[in-house]
Image (cartoon, rainbow, N blue to C red; front, side):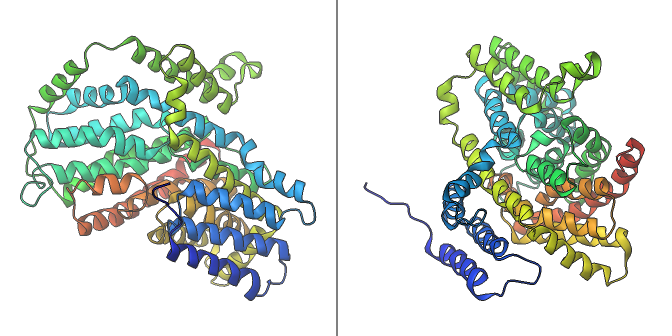
Length: 490
């Protein structure tokens, strides 16, 4: 080996020290078992290592699995059972739903269908800069149900389209040029991404983790299906998708407001792609089939006997793509992101699950809920306060997965302890978990890609993100709560 790539010493040392301090120095609180406290030590150390990027998240997760099995915190004195516990996350259906869906979404790039969809919308609505913004939003929304990687969607598919449009108008990522159109489109490109991520369970990787934690937090009383999630997000999402480009337009109006050449440019790009290929038609058919199955259409029309599990549907879709040759097995083996997601997802879900089983989440929720209860603001004020703390603590996270894993279950349980309706509280926190991505240039994987293109300054990015976080939270809490009430969710 010519070059070793070991763990980073400083964040690794910090993670180890924090783990040891919690394990050996901080006394086990009353009402918490030693095993639960020791698992918390491992969990916090894992999250710190992920935040500090001591190693890639998948590598950190392998170490976490090894430590849980070795220390036997989930099953003392039973090494075999402890190993089974450590590996239990790999049997979670939701983990495989995301992993397989990421593999399915490979076909968007391989066939060129993703770019075709983006340029098609611009050819229809691109006569004005605001129209281009809404075309990007429509393309994002169209792709969202079948692209569980919001980074791949916003950064890998939509961003190159956005850059090619900006370049066509001579708007370069440099002062005096980006103001023409590039800054505006770049900010829209990014800030649409958190909204589309909130719209579907399969629109970003951590969403199934949220579904799992909601079910566990209510002992199965509140379980969100793919269709229920999508329906709950529909109205607030439409409003946000309409409002966000307008607010960005108000904050940083582009110098070029009329773009009569954009539709011609998009049509030229479509011409370069050529007629829609057979592979693209197969991909479209698979996506249509998946949406029908995920939305429960066969069950609705034909009865319960025709119900198809969401993860089973994803496997069916991937099977069709493999059988037809749209994707090859080599394509899947080379897609490290999908396998990486399965590994880290399995580890974090496993640790979060056993924190609940060992009673630590219940203890923490009572502690937080009790503190808020003493403030005398009721469950409505308590829910808003919990949501605000949950969202704006994302300034300290560079991973939505790490944030959700660390805080979601405890904040959900704390809100329940205050008396908040489970469905209302769960949906507010669930959708906020995506909306908080707008805050910083490191908040999610999409952010550094778009920010790194150089069209937006750091001050402009943070200002826009903070303002839009307030706007989106207001829309999703106020309008969303009324919509979910009308749906009968709470």
